[in-house]
Length: 104
Image 1 (cartoon, helix red, strand yellow):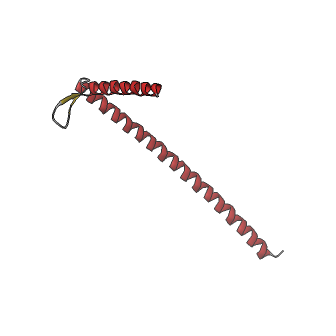
Image 2: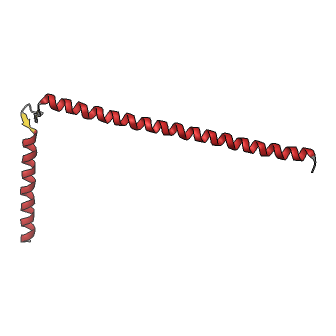
Image 3: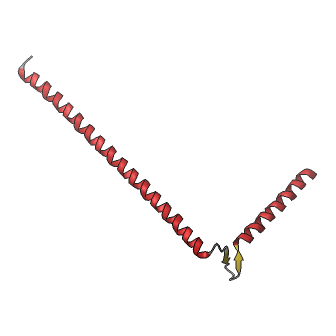
């Protein structure tokens, strides 16, 4: 082999190895940064969730556990009482449906 061919071979090989090393470093750095960003986002989401829970707890405590609200007609409505009434109505309708099925 001639000397220029041999030099070209080793030059090409060194170039490929160097590019491969740099690509590996860049990929490792990029994945590391993505991992950091992912961890930071997870922490921000956890902090946001905790802030929402804390705010809801403060509002619940300041309301004294009051479940009344004002409807669009201006009347005071007890939300828990409304829920209980709806549950009773659902139970009554289920019983009627069951009776209807048994008769048919």
